[in-house]
Image (cartoon, rainbow, N blue to C red; front, side):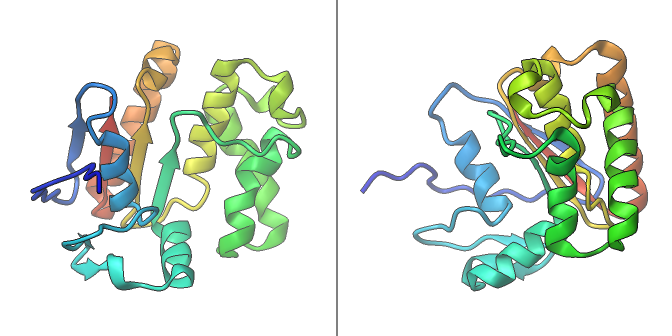
Amino acid sequence: MFSALRSIDLEIRAGELVAIVGKSGSGKSTLLNMLGGIDRPSSGSVAVGGKAIQDWIENQLAAWRGRTVGFVFQFFQLLPTLTAAENVILPMDFCRMLPVRERRKRALDLLERFGVRQQADKLPSSLSGGEQQRVAIARSLANLLPGIITAFDMDYTLLNLRQDLTSSLHFRQTKASKSWNSWKVVAT
């Protein structure tokens, strides 16, 4: 059996920004997936906020992930039959944290923050790679609440964003980290 991760002992404190750096195939994405409850360890444990999440059933993990984890996947994972706005609304629909009547406005506000509001009603196939990336970042913030884990799985994702958007994202995330007792992990 292949072990993607061995002898990992990692503690991330509230408010920290952690960068996981390594060559392709070194286990960065696997580690992010473990922290976010997407993958389960074959041995050992994964504790997030003092909770051992590896033993939770899938419904528990999905509910926890929807409310506390914001992922930006390396390849964005936008649903091709949903518009940009609908892709951002989707996590809100799953978690039902906002009333239905407020979800589109929240999605449009997030898209505006990342400079793609004008693309809200377009399908991902009609967006540039950079625009898809911004929609994916907006989607990751859709259910932003105290305790959020923001996991960016990207080799060059933030490097591709315009400098002003990157600075804006970092400021907002840092402010959220400090005031909401949250943390961020970036794999590059």
